[in-house]
Picture 1: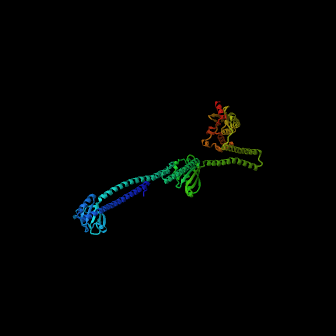
Picture 2 (picture 1 turned 135 degrees about the vertical axis):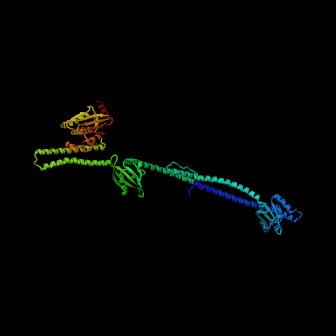
Picture 3 (picture 1 turned 90 degrees about the vertical axis):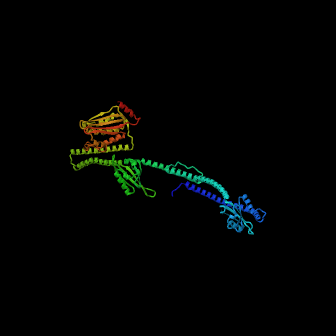
Length: 606
């Protein structure tokens, strides 16, 4: 059955009950008035009959009294009543409205029969003689003999007119009460339905998320209590929603601030949450993944297979995957089932943790261990071989002994150089990692560079290489002089070693804007372009045979790179095979107040 509004459930039935009650009241009142009017009319006829009976009896017994017909005629004109005199046998002796000789025998009339039995009779019936509804009253003139019956009657039309007038009055009053009852019922119904409708509208607004509406107090105590309860509920729900919104925003902000990609999946594997890091890792937008079946949206087969495998296994699991695209990236994928309070699985949590840097560091560590082992194994093997030879051949001549000991000394020196370079590189990296501050002081560059030139002048002469210095005499800059000296020494030594006889190595220094430029330029064999990206890695050498012959450790350029980074600068290289190389060390100015800017300005003006 279709539900209806409360107004239509209360108002029409209540109005129908009121109308039916008033209608029944009017009907009962009309019937009561009809009965009372008939009884009153009958009573009036009885009074008239008792008043006229002595005169009728006297007219029947005394010849000197006027005839009965004339008596009854006079009484009929005065009272508008029909008078009839009926003999014992039922013959009509006299009648004021009809000719007695033409009238039927009235012996079987109800009022006549009752009057002869009890002395008086009454009836309301239709008169065939007059063709109208009549009220009759009959009385026996003398109960002791065969006296005639004296009957009085009046038409019921007059009584009905009076009754109709009264019924109209009652109907008018009832109609007025009905209208008043209808208005009162309408007012009462609306008094109940309007607050309930307001509560319904308020509940709909609460359901839509608008909790600011408050119900006003009315005149019905029960509805006021319900409205107050709804207002209190809205306040509590609003407070709870705000609290949940704050928690959700905090949770989303926390998840978005994470470097790990977090993806929440429901039981159907549809993604319900994806943080910013996950979109960044997967190189996609949130709209492409949210509310969609997550494995079907993935473009990376490795990640899809890892996720499907983890879901098939159940429980917590972790997989390593590799994502290709703009550079190879490595990830640790953790998959965890999400459980509700009853330990039922309601979804899955997938966390992407990028381990590319760890993978790279692991590779660097493995390469470092391999390179160190290789670089140290070569001199150790050589030393062990010559020592074993000397031990086995105790009678070696002095020339052979000196040659073997010289080789051992060179290998020991090379091992010591490797260890010193490793310690130096480790110290620089540790200070850089710990945020250590290098000892920067503003010094003049020319004496420092000239000292480096003098340091390698003998090596240059041995290699028949010209060593030239180009630096303004008044150039000053804020640097760690010890480390810059080490960096330049490594660059100059490499430049001399890899230059052909007759070549030239040039040390240059100048200021370019806010940077100090230190350049070591040679005319040597140059470096192939394929080797340039890895040139500053540890133990990386372009020509291993030549490097080993020259006594290089493979760590010099890596030390230069870290010294540049410790100064907040960088090292660049420009090289072409057969035409030489240019290593350029760029050192930015120090903080204001150290005098560096002033020195730089002076150097620029000089």
